[in-house]
Image 1 (cartoon, one colour):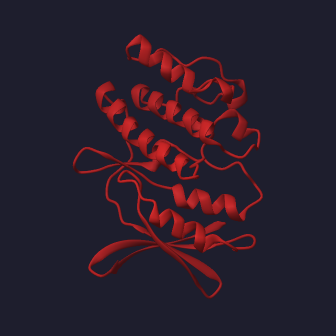
Image 2 (cartoon, rainbow, N blue to C red):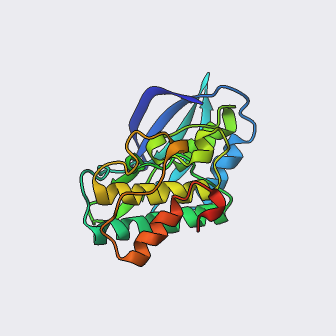
Length: 212
């Protein structure tokens, strides 16, 4: 789909909600079933989805309203690891439920008032792939090489993005700079124990089969 610029903050039953207006590029068969499945499967780290309905020539996606900002600058290793452990657990459960995010980036992480993290964008990414023929979406700095080459994202693609995001938090900048996904080599040195650094390096292996 191509989302319009209309995103509203609404209130329903005393609870605040995000209403995102969406225009779809092709058939919408099965979209409500997809969203209903995502609604039944909810991980505490993921932004909740409450429904999808049609209104005239657009659709409305109802999401949990979240406060917080994405991480900025260099994040201490213990905090970065804690956040990414939370995110990785939610993504792993999403994979087990048959969902793949495919567009992970630091902008999809929101720091909460309790110091934990929330992950956004999963359902929007699912809807985009279900309604568009173009498979490459998201920010190239954290995109797996195979997705950059227009392959559909897989769980291994999400693993790559998770490793690249963790490196970003630790370095305060995308680890590969402006190097295209298909030309990247090794990660810069990270302030982690050697075994943990090796695991992150494996996560961003250019070959999906080499990732954990």
